[in-house]
Image (cartoon, rainbow, N blue to C red; front, side, top):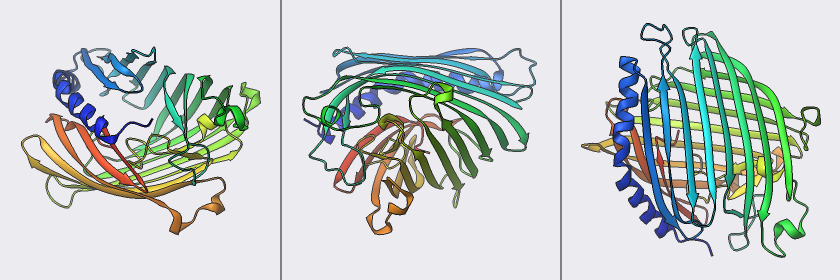
Length: 368
């Protein structure tokens, strides 16, 4: 049985109330950027859903500077996120980020282990809401990126990805048992490629002006140990304007194109808490995805602000299959609570609707 959206709203309110403990974390992190002091931060997590039952855990991180006189303005950051549920589900992520040589070099890596309940609706853009399968994959993932600033705002680099996924629970006579889905039982994918990033935003946490563009091309091949041969190209383009003081207009154009035959867990995924809100996470999946969204952000009172947003997008097996009249929409509004007035980091609660769909989300930071 799929959970009611009302349940998620109640969970979101609970999270919003308990997240007040993160104020010290956000303030300490902001202070560390100014005073160049190493700081420890934390964020506790506890809530309940029908799929997980009671869940508990948290996020712990540490910001580090080489020395007070270090010429590199950005700190190194190591963080751990871990949650565990009554149904023995777990999600653990370790991240590390380092800058050196006056921020000319940047290294970022993330490793994760998850064993988590999911819903699989099939592959394609015409799958029905009433036909889905509950399944639990066990996944190990590793990502690393090394980049260098070659001119103002522009970085180029190398990026690598490794993923191992195995379905440990699925329904009898369901998709994974009856259909030939790439990666349906288990699979390993590994890729090595290139990336280019352009970032002229005035802030990475709450941008009000500037551009952000990210491009990556990653081949996955058997020569790298991959069980599947495919190539993925991703373009993420964002623009920010400020028509009035403390008001922001933002838009994002996103494209994911995958050639050949990727496993189901590496396909382009439609629906998330940031892109195409209003749909269950990974509600649709296929080789290719196109999406566009825009958002208007404005202050209300005290630390409370609001946002209205809308977007269009879809997935397709071939690029020629995209149809303008068949694109799926996403529209909604949200409330933000600012937890750090200096950096304007926030907790957001968004309520969005899509094509025969509605889904509320809560997250830290703006959607894009």
